[in-house]
Image: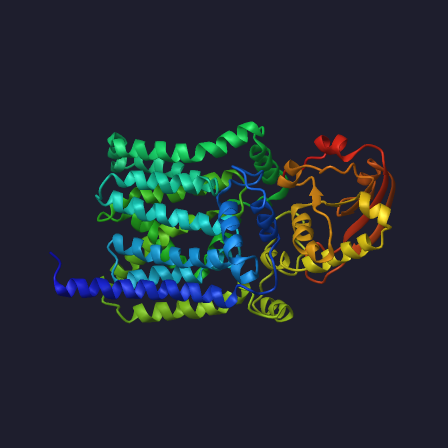
Length: 512
């Protein structure tokens, strides 16, 4: 039976964690309306209006959540980013709980959560809508459940782990990386005893059943995601050396947290007291090897740090207590908070854009390219992709509204990528524009529509490419914007088709 003193201590710790989680929520509520809609947000909105068990570039969970959120809250920037903010707060709370379950006291819990809050990659991802905010939440839940199991908890928790893993897979395939790491971690440590527990296999079966509808969708659609991942890996993502990858990861989770997560890695593998959690360390290493071998983007590795931050916080607390360096507790927390405030404008849209550019320059930082073709961007992609969409749509509408009534009746509006297509679909309602078509990713699956394409008004692509499809191709405008990635994109008006859109559609697929 717990003593009154221990119960009061637990309530104090709960209040502290809840306060930090609410602070995380408030950070996003105050900052998540900056600049404008992100490219992928507009695409997610389009996908949420075509619900299915899968999409070319992702499983269906995040689109289902957005369909529900959009129905209840609408699609204002605050409403759209409400769920990511909630996810960030929940992950913050879970990180603290994991530190507690690992034996950490109040300082370890506060340190783990503070290190998470200031992590630039976490701030950025929880500030706009994407599948990644849910991915981090599913990882945090899975890690918490694993810690409970590995420290001797009821093995029926494997059933709950299977539920989380299955839903996580329906959101993003990276949950499978955690699964592969877990298999290796169990096999390589004394925790392999769990392979003899029926609940582990029941949990695995549950995860499989939950994921099966998406697998069936892939089969019925001839595995489009396999083609997408292959093309993205070798044609879009920038190749990085292992050291460059790790350096970028260190910057993304904030350099000041390096002592915490590095201590966590050492602690999981070499602490005699905590060998029971060694399987978690193997998850981290296995995921790292997978990502390095597949030319993945550094931010894909972010959820793995949710393992190391609480473990490292426990290790730091133990070291500080052992050496009686209690003054370091408030000092390090203060340094983290100040460092977080200094770096926050680099990932949160809180500064006027020109001020941001000057601030970035003052810090001596250049926007890191995320994909091929981004090397010359003045803004990081997470900001550059929030500019220009309303203006681009207005320019397309201006050309469309100068067409004759006969041409308008026959006109199809096209776009070279899903960002342009989704933006025109979202903002084009103000101008009465028809639904957009595109050969890019899931827009290709949705097809060319019913019109044969006697007149095609299209943004992006090349004149030479359209001349293979039309007798008359005219460049009618060029979209220009000082900050948008789409700046310099040409707008074409194509007439006198050589073949109908329905005839050429199978040959113009672009999954990347």
